[in-house]
Picture: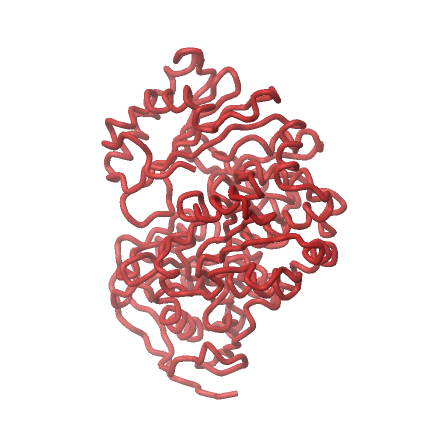
Length: 548
């Protein structure tokens, strides 16, 4: 061990006005974070909002994007200066978001700092992000993020140890100030956890019998994990994992596993050369994409099917306590929960809202329409966990993805569902659209738009059943008499302008109507969504930027 009891410096600084965390931490353009003092101000504001961490352990890692290594060095030196006793860092600065959660929990750490902008692009001119996770491994709740923001508005100085940079690529221990810094294998703890949850021998046998997989790590953080799990532990053919090396700019691609940025996987799955399963994860490893041969699985359907079949995996063989979903996510999971006789909880968007429900044992499975699913094994959504769950279901049921999806629709009905994103909208225009919707809410019930009749309309507010906290203005909901639904919400995960998300859902119980093209099935609701919110006038757009 190298011992270096370096001096602690107190650096004078001034507040930045734009450090309010969004739904998943603070995200800005990389150049914003590279400004002198910008990152340090926010890190000091995190520490100033916490109590009782003297001598405790902090987990630190990121998704490998541009500026990740430099940011980690700053975090290490500031954590040491502020009194943490031990700092655990993934080798190379790499820790997927779910693996960071797993490590926090396994090591009983005080908390963790995750450096990522998730599915947003990386590079000198792209995005960067930082968030704090608490001791349960989950994102900081609003009371902490609001305290961080409050401190950031009045900060006058920050503390940092004057010390050489730590070698992030060498496993082992070193000393920075009075803190021990331990560089750890980023995969080991996570792999052990997955082995405890899923039937690895059955999945390995399935691969041995000729099952084929194509997993795209998108030149992002899940590459090392996917190689170790799918190819080395489970025996998938070499080359099953592609784009496996994390790159600072994700290879120039957008690491978002949707049908726009991972269209090549969709095309492969629909081709004559399709493997049994195509899958992907995003920049920081918390999102997933699942496509069987000839069958795309929507994130909302995936959540419902996972909930219905979780008992097939050893870690969930005793059943699930309940299911939670974000409010915009389709209500397919609700029907599964009802049939199982377990609770269903509808929360605002943001994984942090699931933490209390998981900690209280009210739910086991959680998910959201933005390609996130997970369980009580960590307190983050988990892309590789979702793919492993699908592999476990496939191994146990010995059916194709397509057959499993079709059987699910036959049992529960099909929820036609789509999200229309209008990206980079001027913030003033987006705010005006939402304000107009809120003002119109009292008059909407009873109105008819063609064959559609509005039964109810509200601005969703969540009352946490565990701690009693209330989160208001979480999205405008338009509910129709036939069970259809439109939701309008501004996203908090972008870095430029505002993103208006419009969620459209139609429930179809008739088996004979389960093969409609999704946008055609939703055409009347799409037209209603435009008319109710006057989207074209507010955004200047004739069509969405992205349809998923």
